[in-house]
Figure 1 (tube, helix red, strand yellow):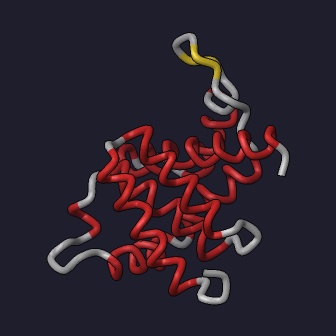
Figure 2 (cartoon, rainbow, N blue to C red; figure 1 turned 30 degrees about the vertical axis):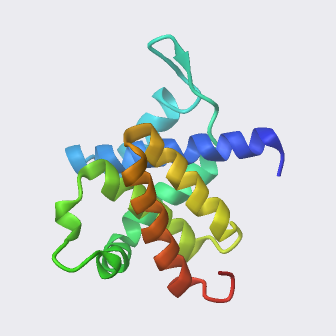
Length: 152
């Protein structure tokens, strides 16, 4: 994979997490959400910071897929949480990270598990401290062991 493609996929993942977070916060419809990100966020300059141009189809797949399969994804995440924890106890950015990562694990066999986990741990670093990044790593790894037992 080229460095540029890798960077555009990383940008797509971060944008997908932001889009899923926004969708949960505001209840934005999927078509409107995708349009808004295509027109105003992907590859844009916001507050003097230029964002890497995200791989648009990859972004669309993560956001649309995580939205379409939210029930199944939430069940997988909830099934790996410690006793006494529920998905609702996690804050919205964490839910968005885990939903996007879980979607990629269960629906994108073309992307290696190690890449998926590593990328979403990096996304978690943008929002959280080390402890939460470790949580993302452990939870996505547990989901991957079950969902992609042949690859892990």
